[in-house]
Image (cartoon, rainbow, N blue to C red; front, side, top):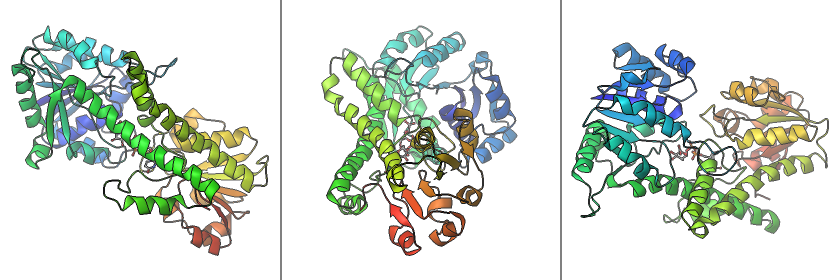
Length: 443
Ligand code: UGA
């Protein structure tokens, strides 16, 4: 099928390449000429495992093309809108200007019968607001939220755990309209590989589809902040939050995933999505229903401060002039994304307290240096560890978690202080090698 993808940032670029990889003829469109030039040359503009391969294959096959010209969308049966919805500069709500700009650019090139599929994370009510403009062109708007995780984005797009499509409903009958049912059928054809595997395919109304996305991210953020709240209690009670998480995680109703206590969540999604959700709920007069998300946010941000405090305390009350090696800059492993990275924020704060901070990361140093040029960046892990008075783990890459032995680290660092901001090291092994180990919510 011929598809267009408007917006070739993270979501859009992955989506375009993934759709080409399952046999579609895809044109990716973005206003950023540099991004389009890179993608057209088959170069992934960011680090995402597996993307480079499907990008090169798609371009070589002729099924995947990129352009800055919105007119190239003409002739596609489905137009995906995958632009960003960042936090507004002066508030918590989502900035929808890119969504509006994308739809404005697309409208003149729509033909009757086309489907416009919104993928961006938007406040509930956005699709209903946009739908009449799309319908004026004889096309149908659907909302098809994206649940991909960075680091697993290709796999999550080709083989998602569920597909959700919000379609227009008939107000009089309360069921999907004829155009809505037709759109759902076409989306099933688009996602044919997942449909063939019996992936749950949920057809619903616009508002539910929009809410599924923000509710999922709100739940995940709440789960992480829950365990981090337990870590705060464990810290004063002398308990071990990782054992606590293991023990409650054995209950299948709870589950162990996303109960990793540490410096908390960051990235381009969870932090801004819970704020936008709270802001939208207030607009709808139901702020109290998700007031807990403010607490989720506050707990999360306190963990960054806690990690800084642990370093200060471990170094005897001051980090001034001390060499601190920070392992990790990305907001999580398998990603070069440093948007709202807790790892980087902790590093910046330590620098602000006068520490000599050296940051290392296998993928994210370029992005980190652009954002915070004041820090010292060293690519080689061992080089970065040399002369450290304290070592701080903030992004749990295998390169640190699995491949760095405490004995080897001891041959490089000057001090024997390790602060594990992700509870990813084995405390017994580090202590046995002569280190003073500090975890998050662990005695
Ligand atoms: C998140 C969701 O997991 C995706 O389903 C969603 O599609 C995406 O946002 C989005 O809205 O686009 P992502 O931001 O890639 O995906 O990252 P996550 O894997 O959710 O991790 C978010 C943060 O939580 C990271 O900083 C990670 O280190 C932290 N985290 C995760 C913890 O602190 N503890 C955990 O146990 C798990």
